Amino acid sequence: MARLSVPEVRASRSTDAAPGSTDFAAAIAANKRNTFWLCVLLTLLGMAFGGAVGFAVGYYGPPEAIVTVVILGAIVMLVISMIAISVALSFGGSVVSRIAGATDVSAEAEPQLHNVVEEMCIAAGLPKPRIVVIETPALNAFAAGRSPEKAVVGVTRGLLETMNRDELQGVIAHEMSHVGNRDTLYMTAVAVLVGLIVLLCDVMRRFGYHAARGGGRRSTGSGSLAMIIVLVVSIVAPLAAMALRMAVSRQREYLADATSVKLTRNPLGLIAALEKIGASTTRMESPNRAIQHLFIDNPIQRFGEQASALMATHPPIEKRVARLLNLGA
Image 1 (tube, rainbow, N blue to C red):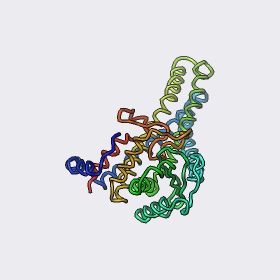
Image 2 (cartoon, rainbow, N blue to C red):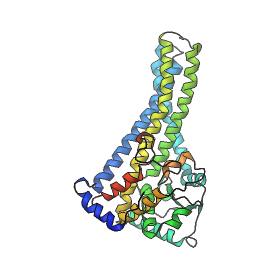
Image 3 (cartoon, rainbow, N blue to C red):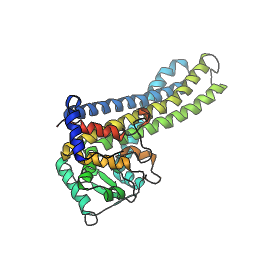
Image 4 (cartoon, rainbow, N blue to C red):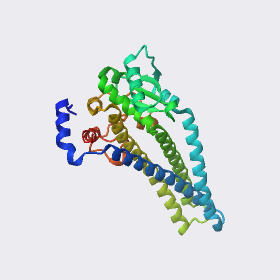
């Protein structure tokens, strides 16, 4: 991606911002609203598949008990989801840091990084997070932790060595926005819910396959059709859950970009940083898919403008830059 110069960015803002500019408050409110409803849909999706498992189990019992078992399956799925999310959040940023291979860095070792983080904490009204560095030449950053008091912000060595102060400030403000907007809480919960749905659907596939081969009380007619439906649902469900997870991730990135500019009052820093990240061909070694959505740029796969919107964890950098250019003052 060709990098825009400061005059070109300003010219683009002056010519393009006006009738289609994005209002800050409206953009932030819309993204929060969209994310809330996506999380609600994901929770309902999990409960629905819990009910489907209940149906598959109850199908082999008395017919009058099927409704009760379906409701029980949905409730059990909800309870398991809440317990799993609570356990995951209890470990918070420490687990994510360990998975990412990050290590703590002191103010003496990286004074500029600590100084920039402190500046953005003051701007956002947040406590200073734990600061870690991933020793890789790739350009990336992440935020994790269930609350601002337990937050961790990490950057790669490549990003530290490539970005100037304004660009680093834009990236750190983006990550602090994730902390302040409680995105790390959202995304941990979403990741756990998606994992449970995928696991549940695997159980459903095995159970439905067994039933379709004649292992059930009603192995013919409508019974076989019901088990085929269970099999189809168990295949479609993980795809739907992951698509919802990707949609939540994209909304969070747009919101963090907008909030970053609100904190720094300097869209050029983040724009330049995103352009450098987009132009870099160096990728992280063996990144973990479980935390790919927590980074400022997906460490596994880069999504261009032609990528499928349903399965992309991050919006294309071109679109993110375009939105930043159109943010109203």
